[in-house]
Length: 458
Image (cartoon, rainbow, N blue to C red; front, side, top):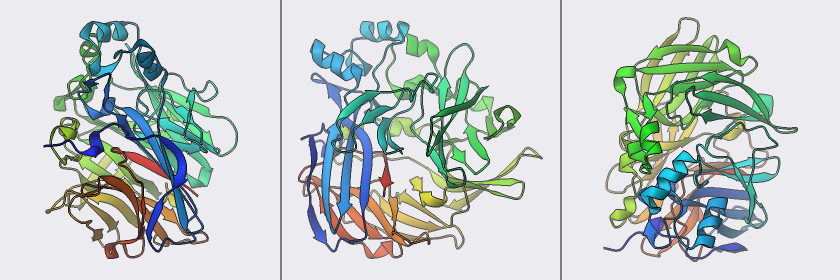
């Protein structure tokens, strides 16, 4: 059986070029959809063990005047350039065990930059957990280089950031592992320099995402402990670098944006969160919508699904939950909002940090591997679009109509890979009626490898 093009190297890198439009593309849809994911799945003939190791490739589709143009380029990290110069693998599982141990001892690694896209102050960055951002040109997607954002980043940065409209800023975090592991908090204002808000000690756990309200940053710390000894022995398999130790329990960490030192933390029963949808405050309570996992076993199920034909990511077992946190009483109450397996939750980012009615997700189940869902948190019901069999959808991203205020006044953009065509396209759904299917499709003439997350820049 042949390997899905979703898990094959970028076939052709290029700058912006016209894309074929099928259907009626709304003329009001103006802006750029950026997406990021693994674009190289091996090095010099040796395939990586896990897709998380793949070098990132940022793709972009620019919409204007009823037409569209697209681009895609691999993010050229220093590690990738070193390997190309050496003519052999130097990093990740493609490298020899001796080289991997030497890398660990020297604290040397490759910045894969393969998870998400940060758009900030008219600049574009590829981001991944535990590395610094890599800036790319918005006009060509060519790599500018790794950055510490003006010296603000202490060591690492996150793949997930959240905007708070009331503060006109984006918030993120970084982790510094060591004898004493520290969690750093960052503010990226719409104008001005990046600011490190402070740091707090945490266990050597794995954190992929968090939530933000207009006053607090919220973390659910699960007992997913990073194995430092295995890392020092050159272990490169993500599912073996993380140990789930349920007996250690979990923890809620609530960080006031204006006074990090006054953080509230308390123990909870263990669970894991890959992705948060949104959070907001209601009186003295904090409400958090997220996708709930029992543990980190999805790391293993995501391991190179390309080993089977037509493989897709299966975030096995995730369900949409709502958490109600009472910081005063140090109490957490969990409620399952939707029993369907789902992941990659997104909301209308204009109101992130305040109450949102709708969550957009990918939904797993039935004959098709994945559908797009708009879940109504008020009515506890979902509207779904299920694409034809053999079409694989990704994280839905909302693009608001200019001047529109409602959460359904706009479009939802979904990058789709089509097995039969062997190519990818962006499906444009009407956010008010996604179940009707795409208003238009914008076609690349080639496959875009698997993408994980992205962003819309109006």
